[in-house]
Length: 413
Image 1 (spheres, helix red, strand yellow):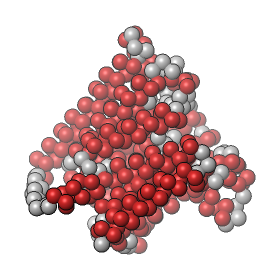
Image 2: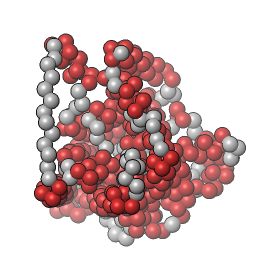
Image 3: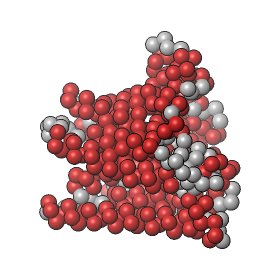
């Protein structure tokens, strides 16, 4: 069975890579397909996700994933500096406003991702291994994003920044960290990288300090090492297709994929706005006009009428789903994982739906999700990303507290 799944997975992947060049209208869309496949594969193979990092820290005290993500943020910002140095305004940087929208949206996102057990990109990668939960999350996250478009477009507490910097004013407002260190002889980038490193290692220290306190209180039971005997052939197969990557491997790969977006498109990674477009297209299937959707959301008519295969973020998001799917299929684990993820209780359905909706609505207040408001802004030296990280973690811990103390423990979270 494993060999058949592996052969099927490799065949489908090869067919997608080959025929994708002919199906998609432009080379740019094809590159987004390849990048998305890489993101999905890397996230799935290393079991990396921001929601998972907060939940692991809150529920088990483990800081390993959180520390890996922090190092990825720092590494990506260093790589980004080489691209945008002295040419910031030629890039579509996510220098976002610092305001109540950022704070409230981040709290909502953190709280919601705890209930739905995934973040925005996590809901995509989970479709292959936790289908029932993930499809509920995708639908209600899309609903939340759609409903939040109006607020995002019309309210000052989302649009206007309380503080800004000269370069920040050239974008959406907010603070571009190199503007704070223009005296450093490197257009402020040396100071911005140093400050980012300080933030990174401070947060890693706090996470590990929390881990020590958690283990001292709850006790720490080390996992037993499992040794297996492999033949040389089995070992090679396992290395190539099955064994999960160490987090540092995925950190490097995701950083390089992010850099490829900057190189090819002069902008970073974004994901959540496409969810709202998908919900709008679903409404159009039931007779709602694109003009009405445009008036309600303050998005353009073209935003809802653009074909799915002509929309770059949709192509990339779809490829993320497929990248995770191909990893499980090639590793021979898809059938078991997918079957196990089909079960869902009524109570779980409502918990996932609630979490995903407020998570989606929160993305509109903060102008993005764990990718668009967190990873990319931090990588592009926006102070908003670091502040968003803090409030998301607070929201995540609050959500875990509510789940633990007020939600029935039989709920499969």
